[in-house]
Length: 581
Image (cartoon, rainbow, N blue to C red):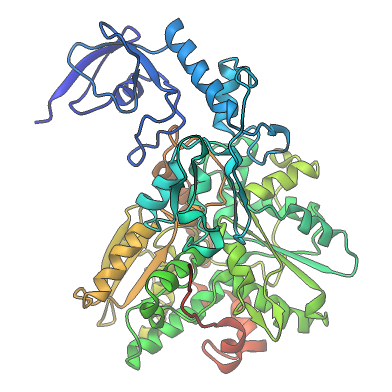
């Protein structure tokens, strides 16, 4: 039986398991102790010294995030001495921090800014030399501004522990120390996958996505362009958070209205392309199984995951599905089928996608995401960028009325919307594969064994006597475990593997709204947003991709059938080894 420790914090008695820290005990007592470097489970290093507290009969103040509790301990968290020390430490941090708050992307969402205001800090209390640091904008997805880095090492922890990418390191020493890629190399010369998980944990503006708002506004103002926009599945359960609404609020109808108010010529939905992806991917899976192709087949919808595999495990590339991601398929369909149907020059169409993912910005630029010399996508905005765009254009999102996406590329099924959660792509593919293999429409469409926020989920699905061994993993540290299982002989005999780079799937993507990770955990966010996603799936009249009437019409009018030559030309791609320094 677990031993419990009793102590008192600010006069409140609390009992916590042995081995807990003072910070753990304070949370159990619902007492807030400020932190900057702490990150639950993966970064408890006591570096920022903002969580200092006073312990009775102890002379020095101690860091609550690392100091263990003891029986009968009495802790005071907000004495004059404690507050003075916290303010002093904040002002020391500010002394080496560039203070351009009015033009910083993180302004009003910055943890350092918030605490400095709360503690009444003087930003110029300590004047002196500023360390020489750099702004690295080499990545197509991210910007690292080391002038704003406070050396909390949260980004390093996320990159090492959650994602197992391990491209962030401390460079130089002492006053000149800064966090960046090893040996001072640029992001684009490293194995960074662009997932953006570092941006979700950075307490300042040191790590952010590249901002393309001005690029989109310029396109909207150009009368020679036909502007098209489409949001990804998880955007609808994230965008309302940018306007103070509860986590997981489904704002699909208002999202369509807001995008239309921005002035786009057509407001479509990436969910349509998710259905299209399933048609191609499920067909490819069946073909590999029946014709003894390369198994297990791995999904290719998550660009962070594709970047990871092609950099770290290039010999596994043949396992990747050749299907483009829904973003790629959407752009290709707009600039082929839709352009022909409406007699518009593809070069005069400007396609914008709204994504929960920073890596989508890099995916957009890949050479293989073109068709006949025209890029599939012209600009990608994250959910955070879209929130800023709405605010800049004076759109009161909270007050908008619901509207529908435009046809024909705005019609989708329940299978499409679940692309936003871990296990969703697999479940959507199984719904179509099952009907195809059995030759009839099956009533059961819920494959609950691959649901949930667990990092690795395995299942065996029996379809008309054909047993498929499947696994869904999210977070690249978990992806590494699955890949190595396959490399070691695939003893579990997987047929189909879904990998999403971000923990919990796209609902926790690097471009989703920011929250203090110590107030609302990533797992909690994923669960709440996923619940909204599955609720929408259940509410859909059609829940299988191959039953989408607009998808059926698209194949009839243009692509003929899944896996056809014409479909392969526009909707499929190939991957090569990603080399880096």
